[in-house]
Image (cartoon, rainbow, N blue to C red; front, side, top):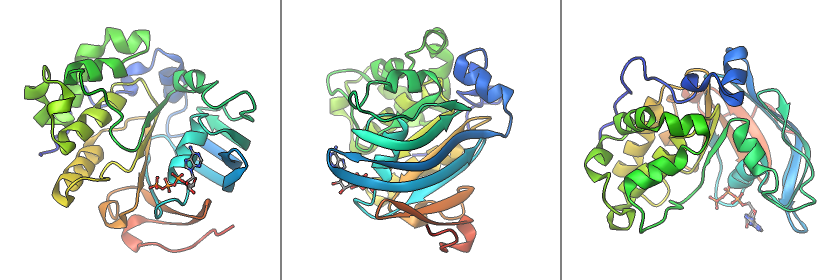
Length: 268
Ligand SMILES: Nc1ncnc2c1ncn2[C@@H]1O[C@H](COP(=O)(O)OP(=O)(O)OP(=O)(O)O)[C@@H](O)[C@H]1O
């Protein structure tokens, strides 16, 4: 697939949302902190997966999160979205505290966190086979403002994923794996978000297709929003994101600019 930048003036899903809680927060805090995680521990039932994490992401940043299977990348995303069973520590999104103990059940506050500007693009496709491509994209525009602007938002998504243009009326169950991944990511990009968490976008795809999907993600003009991409394959991120953070056994193990390769710099 080819990855095109969206047309000029239609550069970011988020900057367009500047009249909304998420957009206003991002617009009011140019180049400032979108995400500030401090001392985050989280897990499921009796299992502690994340251990005292600190992570800060600035507006406009594209950050890679690299780690092997099972080391907690998805759990970190779920914790930020309030989807883990419990957590301790602070998670601030656009300056607002969204982290708290999930004693009343995972997902209880997720809708509020989403309204604060979070878009989670989960691992795997998480799509409904009977719905069309267009219905999936529309479903990503769930805030009133995003819904009003869904036509423009779809144009931007289609500029990022041109192969979807001809598939809008096709049920996603009939698409290839790479096309389904484009739909899943495109649905996330329809949201009015200031922070996009993208979980292993190349997983399960042939290398060339996976690289194409990653190219498309790199072509998204973030404006004042930020993106964190979890990935097992460092080579897909190296030199293409602003920084790469490693994750091992539920801890952030280091940080390095992508072109320097991976170095442990702030092991906890
Ligand atoms: N819903 C869940 N309930 C219980 N344990 C879970 C759940 N989700 C993940 N885990 C466990 O948490 C640990 C971290 O998994 P996680 O999915 O966060 O890792 P990951 O780095 O994203 O790797 P993967 O690529 O496999 O998703 C693993 O031991 C996993 O089995």
